[in-house]
Image (cartoon, rainbow, N blue to C red; front, side):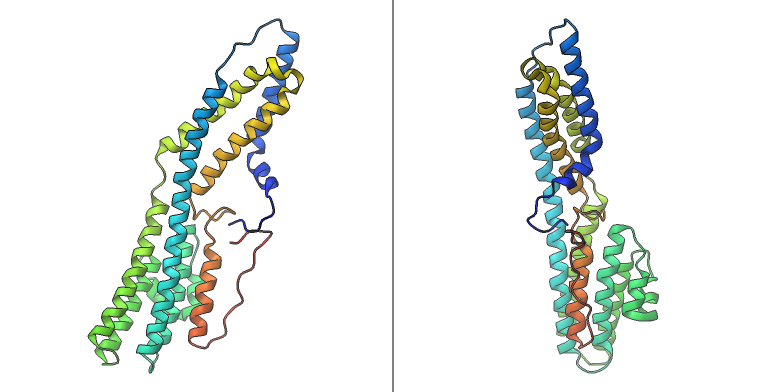
Length: 291
């Protein structure tokens, strides 16, 4: 996620320079053709066409941002649930190794979920936080975060069997674990369910068609300045198109994504401090990007 108030025009240029270069070359060709060929360009309703495309792009961008914001909300819910289960483990099971095991499993769960959404290997972080026992627990299923959540449930059930907590307290743990499972399910739904194909194909088609027609409509008025004017207008539409595309998948591990690594570090810091262990520092931005 890009942070800071500094304008990031260079980021936009980097992402759209290829279609923008092609558009500029096309604008130059149209201008040269207009100057040296005795052909009258047709009058095209590009203003009306551009308005319709702008509305379409705005609708697509809003839909993509809604997915991004839902992803951020679900991770916020996971952070809150992680703090809650750590507080309950520390206060309801003060004696024995169960509280620490639950808290370390929960930190490992957050990292495993981050890796699952980004298509990465989670076992390095799982072993670092929970040791061989956590690795063994995560290996019991293909869904590593869910396997760790099941292991937390087994630890809670074991504490209930040993009389360290009662049935009501076990129910409290299960409600928080249900919140964690719901948050994970929502994130997986976003990851595995792309926007309908029309949201990707139609804006791409019509935006590029508009950019092709734009210099033909402007050349009679702008003449030699057509490449500049048409390219600047096209850059606005291409940037809007790209922004909508980048927000569609908030877990693709790009500069526009939800900062999963930073939020996992937040969970790790809060939960390690809860059991009085040394915690790593907060994750700083890297070149203006919070990962």
